[in-house]
Length: 180
Image (cartoon, rainbow, N blue to C red; front, side, top):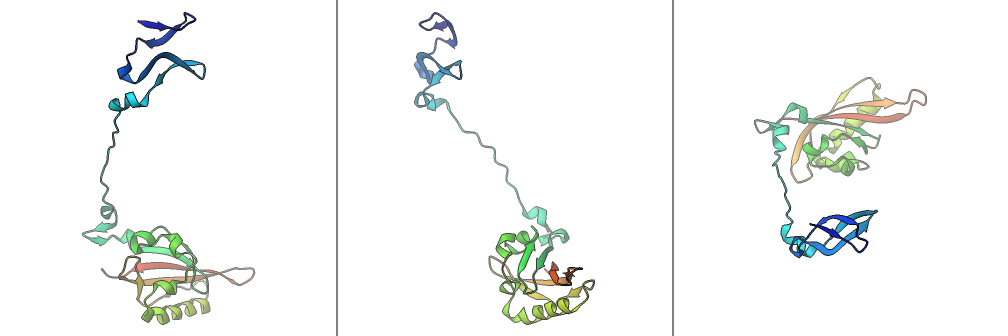
């Protein structure tokens, strides 16, 4: 049975009971449409929340037989002459635990075991002294992981010089996990 307001115009609402959460006083005007007023307190017993959850095992994507797959065993980075990270690709996170923004602006030496800093600084000297087309391979060094532990790594580095000013633009690194 349709409900009529004072002007005898028809309303889309039917005879509503107070148990369904809709206000019986008649429709309210919202954007020019007749929409029933909803009382959330009365409607509460009829509401529910449905959530579908699917577990995701990220380890399956990065491991083969419990070891990192070759695809997830290296990351690229760019450095200044004083070894500060200028950019880091997204693969640094699954390997080291650091987000790229946690590395950028910091010296690479802050993330290397103190006994390996001299060896890595020698690599930087070789890269700066070499022709930009040459690649310099570092000795194995220990990279400090974010949540503890050391990761044995080796870096293949080269430099890029500005062809007009002959000044160093950046040093590129391909950082490879060794062993495991």
